[in-house]
Amino acid sequence: MMTFATIIWDMNPEIFPSLFENLPLHPRWYGILFAIAFMAGFKIEEKIFAREKLNAEWVDSLFMTVLIGTVLGARFGHVFFYGWDYYSQHPSEILKIWEGGLASHGAVIGVIFSLFVWSKRVSKKPLLWILDRTVLAMALGGSLVRLGNFFNSEIVGQPTDLPWGVDFVLLGDHVARHPAQLYESIAYMITFLILYQGYWKYDKGKNQGFLFGAFMVLVFGFRFIVEFFKENQEAFEADMALNMGQWLSIPVVIIGLYFIWRSQKPTTSTST
Image (cartoon, rainbow, N blue to C red):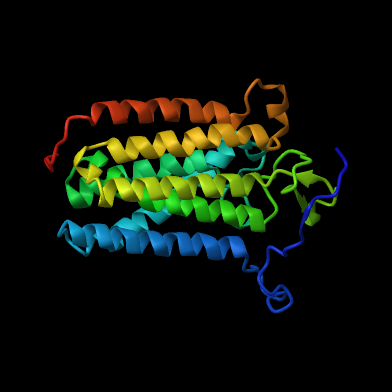
C-alpha cells in the first residue's frame, strides 16, 4: 500500500542534535519522556504514602528499586524474548541500553521482582500491597514511554489508508502507517485514569490484588489488540499465528483476571 500519509512525522529523535553532536551520548526525547514518567510516578507514590500515613522515606528507596527493576527487566526482556539469536552471539552488546531495545513484558517482570525484594527488606508487607500502590505510576509511565517510541519513529504500525495514517519520514518508505505507539499510549492513559479512580474514589486499595489485576488485564488486553495493527518487531514473528507480544500478553491477562477474582473479599491486613 504505497500511499502518502495524511500526517507527515519528521521529528528528529535527538534533542538539539547540532548542540550535542560532539558528545558520546546524544540526549533524546525518548529519554526525557522516560525521566518524566519516573518523576511523575514518584509524585504519585508520595501522595499515596501521605494519604495512608506511611513512612515517607520509603518513597526514595521504592523509586530507586523500581527504576533499576524497570530498566534491567525491560532490557533483558528484549534480549531473551526478541533478540536472543543475536545477543547469544554478541553478549557484550546486552548492556548497551543506549542503543535501544526495551520490552514492556520484561519491564513488568523486572518491577515485580524488584518490588518483591523491596517488600521483604523495607516495608515488610505483602507483595500485592505494594503492587496495588505502584500500578498507577506504571500505567502512566507506560503511556509516556510509548509516546517516546512515537518520537523515535519505532514500533510502527502496519500500512493503512485511514486519514490519521502517519508517514514516518525516518523510515524512508513514504508509507502511511497506523500510529500504533499512540494507540498504546492512549490505552495506557485510559488505564491510568481507571486505576486512579479505583484507588482514590472507590478505595480499591483495600481489595488486595484488585488494582494490580486490573492493571494486568487492561494494559496487556489493550496490548494484545494493538498488536494487530503493528508491524512485527522481529523476522521470526512472520511465521507465528500471533506475534510475540500477543503470546506474552495472554498469560498476563489470565493472571490479572485471577487476582481480580481473588480480591473480591476486602482486606485491610498488612501482615506478611
